[in-house]
Length: 326
Image 1 (spheres, helix red, strand yellow):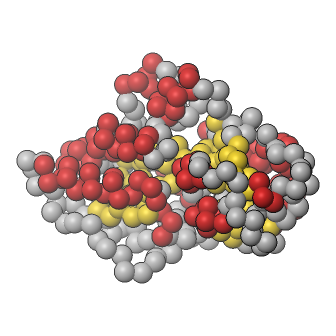
Image 2 (cartoon, rainbow, N blue to C red):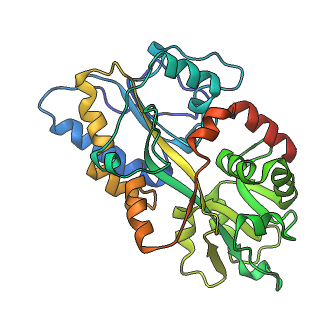
């Protein structure tokens, strides 16, 4: 068995042909998923000789392809891929080639067959194994008697100019936030958002500064719910689940149609109960677990949807939207 390769320095573009299994995972689930994965391999009777890498997605600034790179051939890709966000696998030219040439096979659990929801890719290419959803976190010490936005629409039409933080940095902000705002409010919404955003960075930094009344810090931060939960005991902070729904950033599993039987145990692990519980406990639930939660609560999700992805050239659109933040 070839174990996990420890990366000594950050790579911008990964050597696609280097691994048969590659998982770029959200930070909260990376370690427990990796431990469980290695335990699963050790428990198998049949020796596994594939090469794999499980890493935190935040360690890679560019996912696979930048806008100028060629579309990878099927044999240039790992047999099993996990990635976070609406990344280059959602590029229109890549989707077209991958779907036409049947790069990937359908992965579906039994529950999904009986429950129709718009998080399932009906074309069967992308399996959404976890949901990372974004909410608003308000620093009450900086509110100054202003109303707290209850929705994305109220936020866009608020007076918090240069007081909002979103993940990312100048010329490359959070793709799911930009796409969701564009889907619902068009270019007008993006222009409004660009005037409000005065901060970019990692959500961990937003959490660190929230509720402390620091002069040069955001009044409202858009961050994943798993980070927002760290502030639940902070009386100077209020977490807002927007009325239109928390913005969904998907954690996607892709399995090549020609993956060997030797890799079936890997697929079973990533769609199985252990990983599902790890994700659920980290507030990154599987869509079916979220739907169960929804029965008890009225918290909506805001997913851009498969039709939006199919009808837009995602990478080119993101380049256009980011230009408003220069």
